[in-house]
Length: 289
Image (cartoon, rainbow, N blue to C red):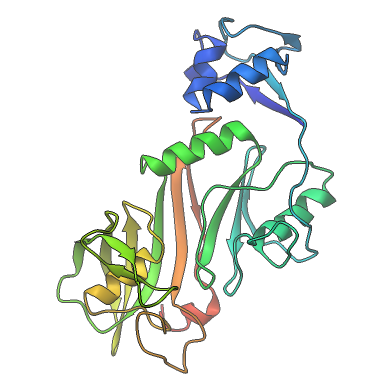
């Protein structure tokens, strides 16, 4: 694939090497691209010391292929440009399989979407969501964008907000839960609060209260597995439908958790993006807007 990048004023007057390093692309990867003459500026091969000007067109040529088996299922696209694909993940589906020969996950559906358009991008998911969790899921179409999204997630400059329904009413309407999360030796699927676990910090805000439950907006400073579920159960307010950390309730077929919003500066255009998706019906009907 030929990936094109239009140089903006943000990147003017710096070297090509510095531009690529801004994406936090690995030094070995950058060196390899130059050694193999895969980098062009305005159609001409260039060295890493070339000074960039606004409106220059940078091209990176990479031999790529779709790396998951395509699944012919409908994809709900929230946002798309030449570098980023944001989709709405349904409940009861994995982001990726544990074996590339398997099907039935989000990456397989994205692979089918790419295949239909004649693209050979590998399927690059920027983050994951639990099987039950719905909402905004980000993919990068090229290696530079993925590297920058990875960096933005690690530095918390890519802000993700969740909506969830929890049992009961919280005493504090806003708060921060700072409790390390580790493995549960007695249950392979569960996580637990543990002094020897990894740091986990969750911020929450009560948006609305109902009879017996509350709607929360949650932001994560860290991204541990099951973090929201573990932390809310820890303070006595497990998520509705969460049989792993709470109680079974026949009214809820899944955990009531939705990836509502992603906010970040676009890795290539440097514009601020806010990508939102409202909750699906199974959760919205309990919000009663």
